[in-house]
Image 1 (cartoon, rainbow, N blue to C red):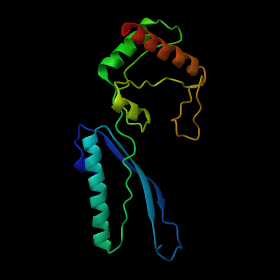
Image 2: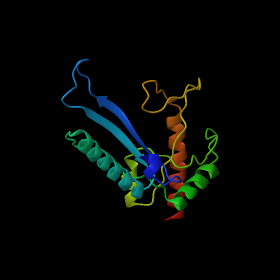
Image 3: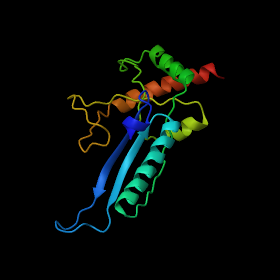
Image 4: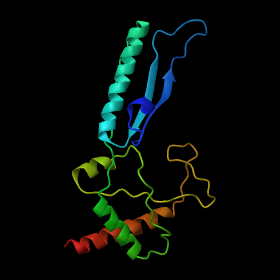
Length: 173
């Protein structure tokens, strides 16, 4: 679906992470449940992916003479950083010369499902990732069972966000 229906210059992923079809080795189970996740970078792509999932499901139902129920939750909106506010936050953090802040870099577009996206829809906002790799360099993603963070990053993050906020408030009295 993604390779055929999504603009090649856009980003989307469709993952089936749970397939519950366990039954007897010699009999087909009466019901099967698939659960998955969709990640997109544009709302228009979200619409395309949803339509395609529903179309494929109905096609499978028609082809095999089965009933398909699609329970599709659009969940979180796309998280969008306000460009001006983001550049201002970067400048403010860099200008603060916080010794523990080694770099402020642009990691490019990311596709997390993030509650903060709701705030960003209401007001100009910027979402920052804070590096918190453990000292041994063994980095694992947030939802990994091996995830472990260097808790020293919490005070560094507070200093950085505090510096960005204080400077912003001073400029916008």
